[in-house]
Image (tube, rainbow, N blue to C red):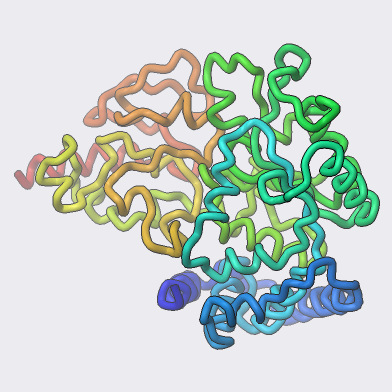
Length: 408
């Protein structure tokens, strides 16, 4: 894990840490002062949770040096200079001042399970254990009226200060009766609105909560939608993927602890520090793509040699996420590294548009608005396919295929 963090930090540093150095010392001095004031304010706030990061690190056999390396990498991930490392360390130590109410709606509980079932947790996951988790149906012992009373008490005690984390989509068909919760049979939509009303910000965790996910796939019988389709008067932070990476959840909360504000978001309300990267651009198989070397069918020579999976339906060129950088399971691997193409799970309507084992060029869509119609084979690929950031990938793909054929 430590080696992975070193590599992560080095990679970001090699890319200029994605920090706008043109802002100058005055900007960063002002930002540092803002963060210091925010942390002093939190430090004077009573700890809502007695769990400390130092205790958890000791329990897992991690040293202070490991923690400092993580903080350095976290600075890079959050696009702030390495000189801010002590502030990140302090923020991580004050996570137990941040009250969180986590509600679970229409989903498979995959995001909660991904956190709970880690047998060798990363520092990202350990930090999530230090937050003051005031309510979570999966983890809490209380049920029924007792759970409702605890939720109401938490919302009142931390009014205006708690983060509302939401897992799962919201069914709206049949007046919301496809999903009800609690002893009073409250619909998921009503439940979400009530919990979000007095929160500081809403964090939608996982693709179901962000864009509706698989429950919203055609024909979407329950009328499932994402949180941002329901909540209109609060800041919404979307952390999609199936499941969401704990590092991205930690980074988002850490940014809030440091600044008291939400991180910079893209047009889909995703934090840019995590979703400002295209899978294709950071893929370990990119060199094979450029060389026109593709897996043509499962189990062929190309598959044995880790050739590019584009022809097998990899959606890396259309997907924005940091999976290839952070990876999953304590940094062990990620889908493409394990031999399967990206299915674009952090993009809207991914199941209907992306989840098929064939190139986008071989897919027929009646309405494929974000990318224009796609009707050509890979060898005829035009530029109408990918996102604005990926324009030219189609031409490059075709040229790579031709180059590969010539080399044969």
